[in-house]
Length: 180
Image 1: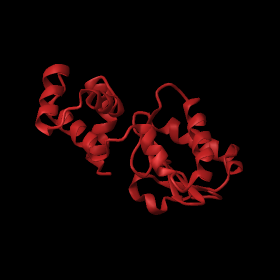
Image 2: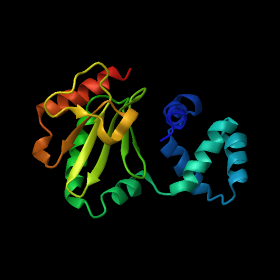
Image 3: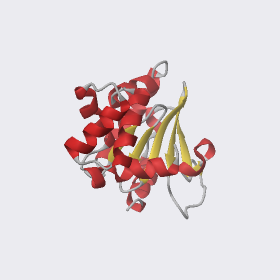
Image 4: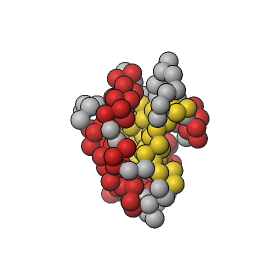
């Protein structure tokens, strides 16, 4: 995802009062077909600035899927990986109420003030857990970011529930703590 777009999505709750998923749900209830009408609606009825309104409408039209639908779609044909995803999510939710879980078409971003992790079903048998851990050396299971590029600094490959051990939770927690 484009860095500027990701920043806009991250800032959306503070600047507009709602997360992207909440805006998309609101638009879906209104069932407005035309882009310009939806933008005008957000601006007039909810005081959203033009830039945010346009972004919300564009992203709502791109996938028109709920967060739950996006996750289900990611694990279609990869159902054996879903329990790994669910454990990661339940672990992160315990870190604090400030965690924002943002499903996208191919991955799920975990955001505090900034994205600190990314969960991606990479293959039918593996989830890649991307982490932002600046100034942390590659070590043991903590690999370089691989396919994540600049979105994350490191990655951990997970193939079984048992792979989510104290070490993985430590790295995930550290990424969360550094994202303030």
